Length: 212
Image (cartoon, rainbow, N blue to C red; front, side, top):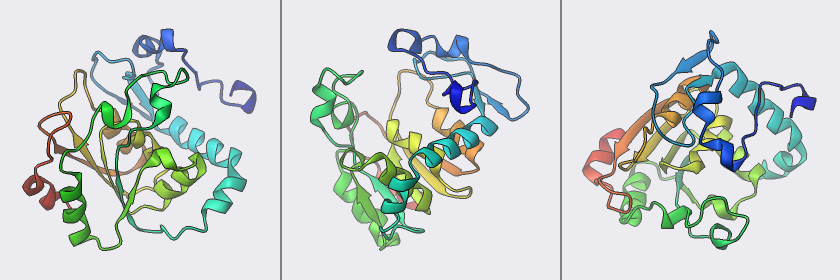
C-alpha cells in the first residue's frame, strides 16, 4: 500500500489490531475525533480525505470487475442487508469465529423486509457473503438508501455517494458503536440509527417505520 503512494494507510495484524486506537494519527483538519472507548476496531480519528483517497484507490484496483458488476440494475435502489451464516466464518482463515448471523441477527427480518418494501417497492435484499467484492462496491455506490444491522457490512459505506441515506440497526454493543456514524460523516452520508433491544432480538417495526 505504501508503494501505491499511501504511506498513511496502515494494516494492523490481529495482535496489534486491539491497539489501533493508540496508534491512530490525529490532528488533521479533515479528521473527526470521536470519544475514547474500548474496542479493537475503534480508532480515535477518522480522516475524511484519506478515506476518499483510499476508496478511489480500491476502485481503481478492481476496475475490470467493477465494469462487469455494472450490468446489474441497482442505481438509486434501496438495499437491505441480511446477515448470513457462511462456512468461511468457521474456517481457519476466519479471524473471528462465529461471525455473521451467529454473532448478531434480526429475529423478525421478514417483517423488517416487508415494512421497507411497503415504502420502497424497488428494495433489493442481499447477503453480502454471496457477492464478490466488486459487486459489493457497485451495490453500495449505486444505492440511494442502505439499511443494515451494525457490523462489517457497513464498511462498504466507504463506497457510497455523498447524500446516500443510511439506517443502521443498532443492538446493544459492549463498546462504543459510533464508528459507522463517523465514517458516514466523513463520506457525506445521511446516517441515522434504529435501536434494537438485543443482539438477536426483533427490531421494533413501529420505531423503524418513521425512519424510512
